[in-house]
Structures are given as C-alpha cells and as structure tokens.
Length: 403
Image (cartoon, rainbow, N blue to C red):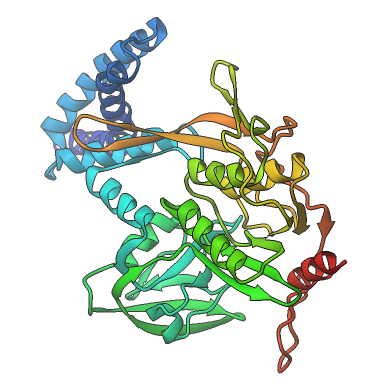
C-alpha cells in the first residue's frame, strides 16, 4: 500500500511538472488568439473561417489545461504578465525579426525615443548577425561619449546583470532610468572586458549634422530617420547652400532606418516630380507606387555614403537616388531590410508592429536579405595603432566630386 501511494505521489508530481512545462506554450496560444481575435475585427472587420476553427480548437483544449493549472499549480498567476509575455511569444512564433508586440508602457517609451527625447546615456545600438548588442556610436556630446564608450563595444552586462542574447529594446530599457542616476556597463573591447560607469541624463537627439568641406562641397550626416529628420535635413541643406555649397555628400553610414515617410520626403527634395520613389507589395501581392510630388529643390551632384549598417529607410533613399541616377553610391553593400512594418493599436493601449509589405527600388530591384550594392565599393581599413584614422570612403567621395 505504501509503495502504491508513493507511486501515486510521484505520478502526480510528474503531471504537475508536465503541466507547468506546457503552460507557457499553451497560454501563449490562448491569450494571443483571444487578443488577436478581439482586435482583428478592429482592423479588418472580418476573420477567416480557418482562423475561427483554429481558435475554437485551441480554446477548447486550453480550458482543460487551465483546469489542471488551477488545481495543481502551487504558484500565483499574474494574469497581465502572462498575457503580455505569451502574446509576445506568439508574435515571435511568426519567425519575423521585425514584427513585435509592445505593451502600452513599451509603446510609450518607443514613441519617446522616436521623437528623439529621453533619459539615458546617448548611444546608438544594433544587433550583429550573431545577436550580440553592439554600440554603433555614442551620440556627440552625450554622457556615453564623455564616459568613454566607443563604436564596436559589445555590451554584455548592465548593472551586473548579463544581457547576452537579449535584443536592443530590452538592453535599452535596462540602460535607461531616472536622470542623475548611474548605470554600470560591462563591454567587450578588443577581446578584453571594460567596465564603464555612465550618468543618465536627458538626451536630445539631433538626427542631422552638416559642415562645409573643401571645394564648395557640402556634407550632411543623417544618423536616423526618426520624426522630423526631413525638416532638419532641409534646414541643413539650406545652411550649406547659403555658405556656397555646389555639390553634396549625404552620409547614411550606420543609419539603421526609421520612418519611411521621412526618407521619402528627403527623396522628394531631389528626384524630379512624378518620378518613382518606391514600390511596395502587400500580403495579397498588390503593388503600390509612390512618386515624387514636388519640384526639385536640390539640383547638384550628390554622393551617398553607405555601409553594412545602412538599413531600411536608408535603403529606400539609396535605392531611389541610385535608380533615378540622382546620386552615386560609395561604400559597402547595405544591410538588406526591405520590408515595412505597420503599427496596429489594440484596445488596451498596446500595439502590434507587423510586417505588412515588402518594398522595392523604382526599378523593382529586391532589397530584402540582399542589400544595395554601391556604384563604387570602398572598404574602410582599420587604422593601425598610433596612426590617425583615414576615412577612405569619404575621401573617395571628395575625389569624385572634385572631378
């Protein structure tokens, strides 16, 4: 009898372990399907018959699982956290690196960052092909720059907590905090660990900087295509024009993208009216062509600098100018993000950022997973220790414009 009871106890323990192991995947489907079903009607007013059947089948099965959880699970269930995390898991299951679910709080933070004002340390970050978070560059005049953070630093810890394997959004949220507080970062630099303390401050991001170079050549650097950057670009160009600029270099290196409309507004300043700027194709295979709407404002020789971190909206501008023969492209092949995301607001303030279209250059050249090849390929050669850094790509652009 004692042996039988012991077996029953072991059997129940195994059941509990199995149920708990399944709960994340199960609740993911349940929560996500319910949330998607409720909000799908807000977007389309309809839902497919196959989707209805899947929802009904999964919902029925999940009710049984939930009964078991309620009966056997010993912990407390945070319903909101379960909902948020499991919907994220469901969207991650699309296997699309650009689609994501954001809670209302995360969406608010995202909007603040897009507008260029936040409390943090002032760095641009990205993920390399291995998923590591790497510093593209510190913002000029930022706490990060003052503390000594450098381009190509790999961030591995924030305040003693490992962030290896986490995406840039999560790492960014850990770095940000109240103004005046300190954050401790551990980075890998030249195969060595470096620990850097940085004070958090209010950061104002300026997307554009400009300067006059030799031989009446103007230079404009765009760091991102966040809201308002096209207005900043126009102001920068007029400033250079007023100083006598007759030719122009647009630097899109390390510009990982942003708002498509901002890139199109800049393209519209350069490409003649009614010329193609962009072609998009939606999930139904329907094509839409965007054309220039205004007369040319910038009519001069233009060189655009790009590299492997020039992505998304950067590639839209590059492809548009290249195909319309309004600029020559110098540098290395761009990143290859040729898809567009739309943001759908859900009833609780959260949002679903979903890949809804692929875009192509005016000549219908595919960009996604391929990138755009420059007209003149120029690699940057790492500077030797003790020697001054040489920007071969910029020098090539200057050489071409002097001719």
